[in-house]
Length: 212
Image 1 (cartoon, rainbow, N blue to C red):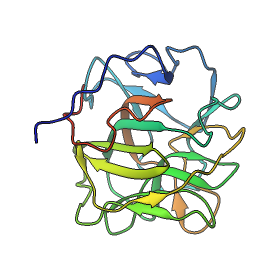
Image 2: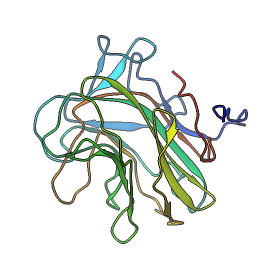
Image 3: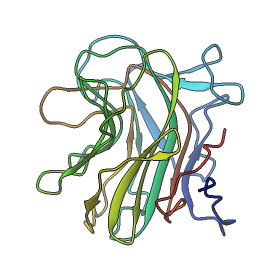
Image 4: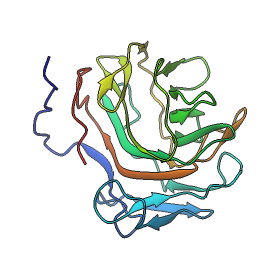
């Protein structure tokens, strides 16, 4: 089947962050900075910059961007989270997006290099089995809930695992570059570019060509 082309959206983006010159959200949501995230102009997927996190050991929340309040998408409905991610190396389970208040980790890399998405105690996880996150290279990561079923993509290719989950995460904040406050988790050690969160199932569980 040809790659799926999503329809034109009315504007369901929650945050839209390119990280070309700053850490601002084009949709106007304020974020606070903890630790040493910076804008890099040397390792970039698209545009002129990317969000860089230090390649050092540290606690799950040592280096992160945190939304000032709930972004209003964590309801029991469709959503899509996608970004280009770049990992230097890892010592533990490194997270690139989470909700620190509910222990839901919407993006992480396990110690075996597998992309994984954990949705909090009692709700389960979706692992991208058969895929390995190569170090020092850009990978497109995406997770989507469509009609109550969560599935994930690796470079636009839909993974085989799925999770039925209609959980409402309430007023949780979004933490970019953070792990979760449980277990052996660490902050992100690398770069993030072109982060998008949509209030819709953008790809409806079909393969697609990631955009830059």
